[in-house]
Length: 170
Image (cartoon, rainbow, N blue to C red; front, top):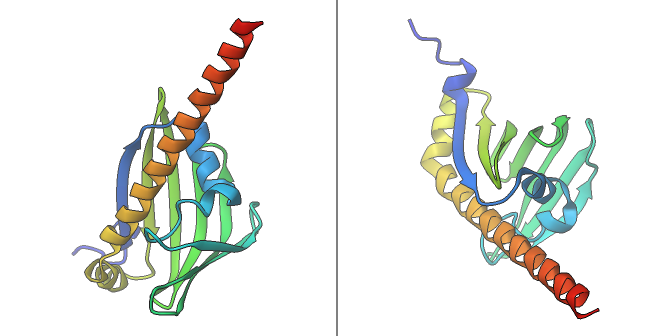
């Protein structure tokens, strides 16, 4: 008989390969200055209320939705293993509570393999979240993450080229 509450049956997993080195992807996930540029639905500003990036540290982000209500994302960091693993509790109020998020990063040259797991308290809760469109929601957030990373890389190369040109002019 299958065990319906095994972690595997309670987990939503999204995997991608991001066109950015692991250090930059880690920075995007851990630096509040960067988080506000990609976290949340497209066109919605994210405000960082709390960002204590340490084990036991709390985080809280607020997004003002078009309907005038705030969407609150909050949690506590459980494990930080730079640059490959980040585990946190998470609540996304008013829709989701009591989940654990895992961000797993693996360097692949100048790219990063990215695995995102959301572990729910029960399999039924996971299925409810799937019906609510959790894959589309997170998918759009990770599209913004990819766009943010691309802009950071372009900016970095522009700065390197500018410095190289300045050095050549001397």
